[in-house]
Amino acid sequence: MKPLPPPLVLAVALVLPGMGQVLNRQPTRGLIFAFFTLLLGAFTLVTADPGVSWVGKLSGGLFVHALAVLDAYKHARIRTELLNSAGRR
Image 1 (cartoon, rainbow, N blue to C red):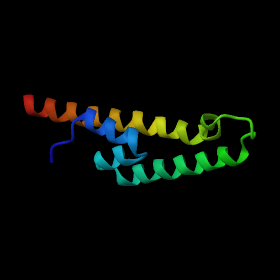
Image 2: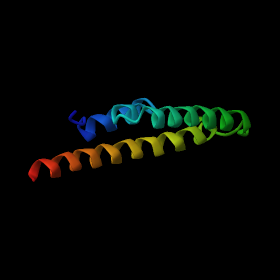
Image 3: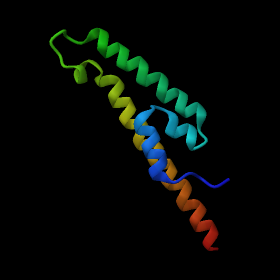
């Protein structure tokens, strides 16, 4: 099956944590990213000082979400390049 275009995977991954991995046919990896995004977001929300901005309160979850976005895009690009190189042979 043909992989989805990397920009589409990137757009979906930006909106929903872990869904980029699901689109790349890595559902377990996507579930792990979604779980840790929620877990670390909740942890920093609870442990952050009351005077910290909302970005600081959710920084753990935002960090994992950023990693998930980069991971999904990288794997989408690799899958696309592998398909393209196999088609050139």
